[in-house]
Each structure stands twice: as structure tokens, then as C-alpha cells.
Length: 167
Image (cartoon, rainbow, N blue to C red):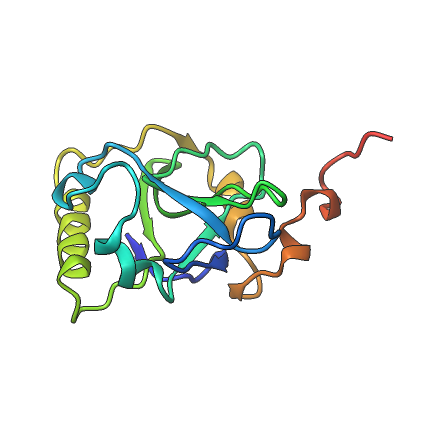
């Protein structure tokens, strides 16, 4: 289980959605039906109980199109600059299991405490079984050599030399 942004390339999250039409920022969140999220009442999106977790939090950017993207909490980017990003996800890596949370878990916030408790219970229980497994080398594509937040330029797949561009 990893809590925090290291060693991933991330983008900042906030509770307030960006104004429509902007390239930067996020428009929505989507919460999957998952054992972790069942402990916090939700209607499939992050409402006020997630305010402190999203404010000052981060989302991991899944630039590698070959990595499975099945987030527990999906952070939906602007339609003008589409990015696959999540602040709570799990993956099998080789023969191991990994659970990642990059939300701001402020221990003075009851909802954050509930989320952390739910994450710990799930990670230490028998139901922790990620749907998707990748090799360690494939997982390495999520890891950034410079820790911290990415810029829009770095998340643009058209700037990625590993992706063949059609002309």
C-alpha cells in the first residue's frame, strides 16, 4: 500500500471543478463500487465528504495506454485535454498486489479517517484482489524520475516520443 504521490507523476486535485471550456483542471469524479468506497456514503461521485481529500490531493496520470485503467476513484479531466488519472487504484504487479492512494488524508477530518480505515481494512483483508495484473517493467511506466506534479505539456500524449504519431 502506498499513500502519497511518490514515485508517481501526478496532477493536483481540488474539490471545485474547473470552469467549463478550460484545458486545465478537472470536471468530475467517479467512484467505483468497491469494498473501500462502501464505507463512505456516496452517489458514485465525490461530494462534500470528499472535500478535504480532494483539496490539496493529487491524481496519478496513466500516460501508458497499455496499462489497465480501472480506478477506484477516477478524476475526470477536461474534455479539451483528456487524461486518464486516478487518486485511488489497485493493480497486481508481478506476483504482488499494490494499492495506491494519493488523496489528501487529513487525520483531523472524519471522512479522511474513515477512508484511511477502509483502505487499511481492505489492504489487510482477504478480499484484496486487484482485477488487473501487470509486469514490474510495465508498472515502471507509471513511475516518474522527478517526483511531484506534472505540467500539461508532460501529460500530452502527442509529446510522448514512445507513441507513434500518424501524419
